[in-house]
Length: 226
Image (tube, rainbow, N blue to C red; front, side, top):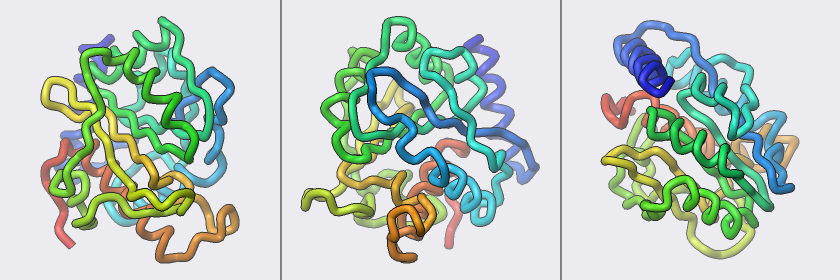
């Protein structure tokens, strides 16, 4: 299944890079442990998808999928998004499934809605015990795709005064996970009536989200200039 998944992802990347119009879907991850995996369920990913389709000329299915972390269906999605405020627990089967997915070419974006950090880190450590999160430098290509973020992640919600940080997991030279911390990107993708964020704040969040999508679907190459 892993080899088939890699082949599928390579076709998607190739079609995207050569200007064709592949159809694919991204998914919100449902997990156990009691945390609110559904925190940004209604508008967050759909708004990001619409922004990417308009500004990056992607052809992502406008409807987000929902996939359980242990479900083999996760291999159908080149990009999955995990968020929430509270507890996260992966059992042994889920841990193995997520590891195989990421090793096989998948990518997970984790957005801490505040309060998740102490729970998500031990679970990701179970997935990749040999790896540690590393803070990505501001020079990393993920900050310099269609939109330029010379100072790294924007601060979307001010729960604390700490600077936002972008962490990554790098497996055999490939970024397989991007984790935004003290930032709250997912909330920034929500429609205005959810959090009443200013248009400027929402634009920064959507632009950074689009950079992540572009980096993942194009392998960090073929950077689109303004």
